[in-house]
Image (cartoon, rainbow, N blue to C red):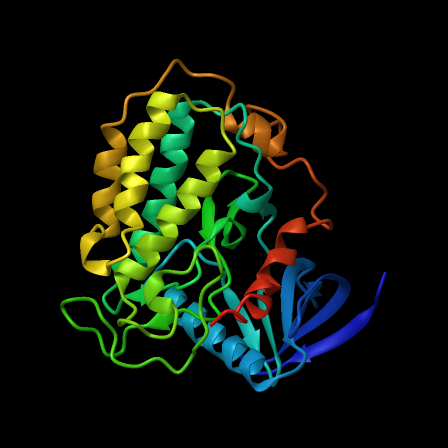
Length: 303
């Protein structure tokens, strides 16, 4: 196991000393370590930009966005702890991403609840006083904690709407190349139209489509979901849902079959938590989820 001592500089409250114990992820431009906050015996995550100006710009942008989200009271992102020249320290969230979720035995009611919750955490970004668009929503950037709470991660290419307009289009963005092939909206390919709330809505549609494909939902349920997904993923932004908060209303109208096995059994191995354990069965020093945090740096080549 790699042992390394790191000192991060001024974050939200002065110096923060971290012992980075284990590298748990590496991308083309970044590394992620599981660390311990010195003096607190508390796990944290250290994300380090290892090369390239764009990697550093994204790391700095993620720090700014996460700090803004914390101050704005957003509850579905990791807490930023400190930032130094090329690395950021964040709250450790035990759990894993939906990229690793097996939904094969999930009921249709549970799928609806999952999709509704994904809309909830995304819509909450758009409803902040100064809104934020994530710009890279996909299963590997949606994390579930050991308690079953969903979080969005990887805000390296997210945008705070400093130039917010009523129609939801931003005026400028210093972080280019956002999005992942297979999930990116048409307007992210070469700036065909301004990125806006509809960009996240498109990516929500693609995310629901991918997760739905991993389930054993009935044809009738799939047909109804496809109507929602088709509207989310309309090629023209103006033909999509105007707000994320409009999607759950359509999800609610979809009829479902009788409940099958709980989604929590598939995600966490049990339907109800054991005493003092929660739903998460892995040891806290084996966090597979943060491998996904570095992926944005590896998926920008298509623009």
